[in-house]
Figure 1: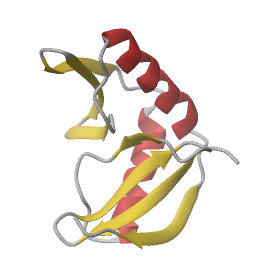
Figure 2: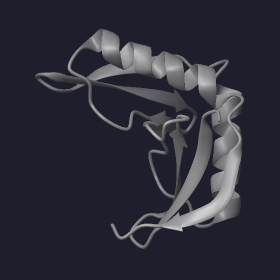
Figure 3: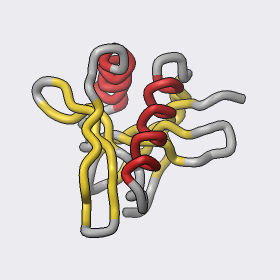
Figure 4: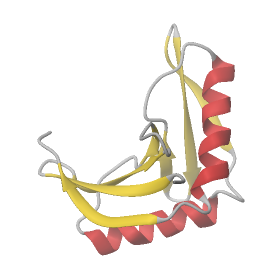
Length: 115
């Protein structure tokens, strides 16, 4: 099994997506929610189109933590799913996301979450 996009519906955020690795590790996610599944599917298509063109931004989230973000007009298209202790770890995680997102299939089933 390869990496795949999965959709989640949260009452507070609408429908969001995550890119999961073959061992279910969260590799990256949408920065915001979408009103419905169709809008979320379009967002995944935008991510796939952006991976070849976008310049990743590695940034500090605290004094001891780093994260990555992919930005395209008008805002971010993907963000790190967690913070990393070292800048190089955040860069490596972003590189992996970029490599896997372009060809990752979409699981069309929407999972419900409580938060």
